[in-house]
Structures are given as structure tokens and as C-alpha cells.
Length: 333
Ligand SMILES: Cc1ncc(COP(=O)(O)O)c(C=O)c1O
Image (cartoon, rainbow, N blue to C red; front, side):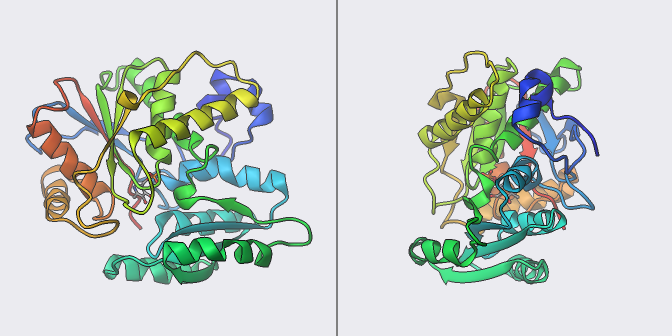
């Protein structure tokens, strides 16, 4: 694949300074999300097929920026963290291996169901080195040891936060927002008032917020927080978007003024339930309705909770009357 990212087209200097490895085929499709009986016109932007060989979902766009950076640093290993069922860790392991990079993952406990058990089997088969510190505290304490363990010669591993949501990984969703803006300009959908997305580590929501502003859209991000182990309030997401912006500027791009505020990326906590990866009744209902009424396959940890939120916010009239985009971040395997 030789596709150029829109970020390089907007700011050609970034082609020299910010390497990119295409792993999926954009633009991902948009279509009306009919059948759910909502008041606002809802559109789907479907990231599920973004990636190679059916390996879709929202992690792939982050890896398109992160993997070349690992290569640039001469790292032999990516070291990252996540929950037992981490989609991020699995995508990182599979795509990194194709680039000759090893992946080591430190995983913390959360409720285990059939999906998580299957995911763990895939993680073991992926060739990633797995560590099980169990709690976040023990994970943090073990990090220096893990870094030392995966240092080759003088080269440390490329350490990435949960979900790949570093300022660089976040560019994946800046790119997605630029793509959405192109689709709006091309008449494929109207300019949305809101885009609703799950928030697990924040990179997707923060990247979207920055990209929408860079593209000149007024669309705001409604982030449905599904993870209680990280701070993911609006200020935190605005901060991450700001660090991604600084990164692009430091690499030479002359960006339009894009002062993002908490109103541009709003964190909602009402659909988290008992915590990360704890299924909720509202989520189960949304998952079932999506499958039976809208032909959309979701999962219970992220996307079902986000759709449940969209349905409730719509019923409460708090999404306004403008069109809304639901971002499907789940890549079924
Ligand atoms: C299917 C799915 N949707 C959404 C998210 C959340 O995205 P982010 O981590 O960028 O907030 C994740 C991962 O955390 C995910 O696996």
C-alpha cells in the first residue's frame, strides 16, 4: 500500500518528519444508522474493517504512526500495558511482528468472559511476551524491571501507554477526523453536531477533537468513558490533543489556531457501570438492538456502552437536532 495520509497532504513537511506506515484502506465507510428509532439523524462511521486481513478496529490507525517511530528509534521491542482482553495489545503484537518487532505486554486483571478468554488465547498465539502483574499498582512497580529486561544493548524498548494513546498514536484519529471532513465536503454525509465514541485510553476521542478543528469542522466529540482505571475527563483529553498538536508543530507544520476547550470533547461517565469490562444491562440492550435492528456487530466493553449512551442522550434531547456520527471502533475477529 502506498497511500499518503491526509496529514501529509495538508502539511507536506510532515512527510519528511513524521513517517507513516499504511496498514488499512481508507476512507472507512459512512452510512445512515437507521432502524434504532432515534430522534437525531444518526450516521455510522465504521472503522471495523480498517486493517489487514480482517484485523480492523481503532488500534490500527494508531499503529500506522507508532510502528515507524519504533523503527526510527532502532527499538527491537515495543513494551506496553493493558487489560487481560486488550485489543490494543493484540493489534500491536500482530502488526509489529510483520515489521520485525517484538512486543511485550504487562496485563492487569478485569472480569473474564468468553470473549476475554478467546482474546487471551489469541494474545498467547501472537508471539507477544506476556506478564501478569494483576493490579495497576504492581504493574507500575514492575515497569523499571520490564524496561531493563527488554533493553537490547543500549537500546531500550519503545514504551507505549495503554491503548497506544501517546501523542503520536493519537494522530491516527486526527487522520480519521480529516477523512471524515473530506466525506462531509464530498456530500457523503452532513456536517455532524457530535461524534460519539467510546473512551478507553483517550487517543481516539482526543485525536478526533483535534482533527475536526484542524479540518475546520464545528463537530464536537462526545466521549463515553468505559474505563475507570485511568483519568479520562475532558481536561485530560484536551491535554492529550494539545500534546499531539505540539508534536505536529514541532515537526514543522504550520497549524491553524485550534484552541480546544472542554466543550469540544465532553467526557460522559453515566454508562460505565461497575467498571472497565463490566457489562451493563443498557449495553447488552444496545448490543442486541444494534445487531437485530441495524445490522451492526458491537462488543460489550466499549462500543455497546457507547451506543447505549447515544440512545439515552438522544432520548433526553441532549444531542440537539443536528446529525450525529457514531464511530464504530470495534474490529471483529
Ligand atoms: C473496540 C475498542 N473501542 C474503543 C476503544 C477505546 O479507544 P481509546 O483507547 O483510543 O480511547 C478501544 C480500546 O481501548 C477498543 O478496543
